Figure 1: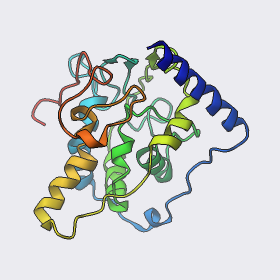
Figure 2: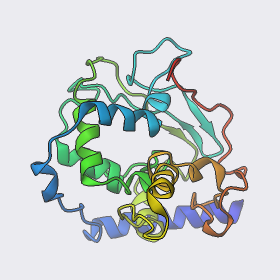
Figure 3: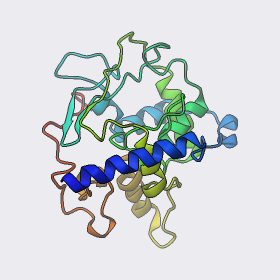
Figure 4: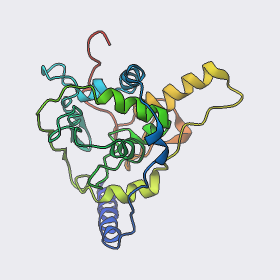
Length: 238
């Protein structure tokens, strides 16, 4: 464990150096998104299938929908799903469609900082342009809740957010979901839900200490590095 911590600390320091040289660039805008009309109903369906409501709503704590989730305890520390309502100060009300797309597809916040992969953008990167437009249309209908998001409470060295830039460079490849031409519509629909929207492997595939999923061992169950003490449940009736 000591070697792991020293290694991750070194990576974080190296990432900070690279950031100082401008080696990490902000992803380009997706020009095709501006020509699409979002479907609110389909976007709401995708939000439920993708676990947005389950993670970003503190049901047991009596929280408002999408105003911030219950604490998610992991061996890395405690994560707090942020406010996704249309509140311009504490939620995503001041975001643009391009901000939304970069967050989902690249794990980059509007201010350019990287997101922790507890937010499963490594799977959401598979969303199509229409998926993004539909989700955006749905989220724009969510009532604003002026509730501040809680800060992530992570242990050192995972608390060094700058290290995530290097993590993304080493382990994350943005790409759209590609249907299997030999699989048929039903197969591809299921694959899309499993591999992109539903992000099933996030919980059901072992991960290394660097939070990288082991591709050669899909679905046998989680390891201690990703096991959580409490998993947010879906909202009643959903």
